[in-house]
Length: 313
Ligand code: NDP
Image (cartoon, rainbow, N blue to C red; front, side):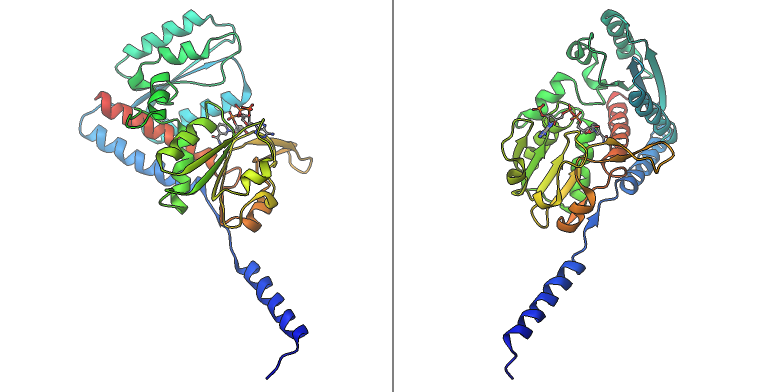
């Protein structure tokens, strides 16, 4: 039977439309994944205590009154408590002299009850962040920002004692959808010390081929379109659009941005750096904001604290 060309075309269009409709995106549920990880850590802490070892202890140092940092530090303490760990918080005024912070860290370095020390970043501008991070004992650096840990991360065949928490969370989430990252083209937007650069170093260690982009990158959408894996950490609300993405890409959105929303009681909502709905139309897997990378950061901090405690006895 000969089908007229017009009918053949409409048949083809229906098939294409249906394929699009059935191509479902996987939403990577960081909240559930982090909860499972935290439950596992809690069990390991109980086992450690049952064997007669001390409770793992984390000390946090917060300088100044940045509201976002206060929220982050509070949730880190809550998470420690839930995991059966001890936590001690030091909240210092913004004008605390560098020397005083250094002395506190040195004291905590000697404290046997403390296995992890976290200096909440960013520090007030007048302080020397590098010097402060350098004062934290290497084996208690649960944030992974000690220069030696970062240096080891960047070197082949060297192992850092701790890996920065958010970047570690990014890799963990990626591996829930792509068990092997080898040979994949990963594009990272952002090159900060806290997220972009350590994520890129970790991706290289996973044998991905990595392109690092920043504010001076020319034709960002064209570079992003090459990515099998896209990690975005730029702090620009919904800047990455759906039509920048390669179909089937795996997208990890680290960005957390407040945008005005009068329909909400608090007057704002949180969005990522990626236009989520648009990304869902093109990508094979995407992390939401909130509920993607955010919860993983704390889970990784708990994991690093437990590992430090196991090392220190
Ligand atoms: P930074 O401001 O330190 O770094 C931003 C990076 O993005 C820089 O490398 C900058 O480039 C790059 N950038 C800025 N604008 C553009 C642009 N238009 N095009 C391309 N690149 C651009 O931010 P962070 O890395 O600390 O944080 C990034 C985001 O991640 C923020 O939204 C933050 O809130 C979030 N975050 C989330 C965490 C979580 O747990 N979920 C933890 C930490 C951060 P250049 O170097 O050239 O200036």
